[in-house]
Length: 214
Ligand code: URA
Image (cartoon, rainbow, N blue to C red; front, side):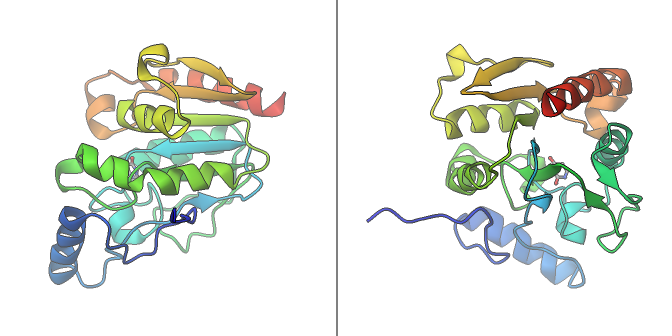
């Protein structure tokens, strides 16, 4: 019998042995950190689903909220705020009172991977949660994938072929009325090397805003 997956993995998800070991080693070093599978954050009525890669070690893995407490989150939450998807101020901690309006943030992989690099088997193992997350959003209009791993996993989640839906910065595909939009990941590396500038990121969010308002 097929196992039904919920939209959120339990914090102590046992499915990926390497990620469990990494999480547990982190918990030994930093017992006050979250150190678990990080749940999606945002509005259940979201028209925009931002799909990141995986929790950062000292960001979401520490705080327990996607993109909260690291460099990537500073840019992501500032941009969400600029385009009207936030209420309240982002302050790098889960009790900052921030809420998302019409948006939700999730990750393709819910547990922190070593070196920020999940392996294929882990991405595949976590995909049913992403599938269930997408399916549970009745008002969804835009899936905004941050980076190629997120994009490719989302294409596979939707049962589509990668060769027909290649990743690129700013690519858009209409999937049965929902737009699959992608951007370079807003990581420190990509912004430091100028692969992704603030202007480029904001251009993608301007598209997301327009599509969600339509
Ligand atoms: N934090 C997340 O939650 N996801 C990312 O992709 C990067 C940082």
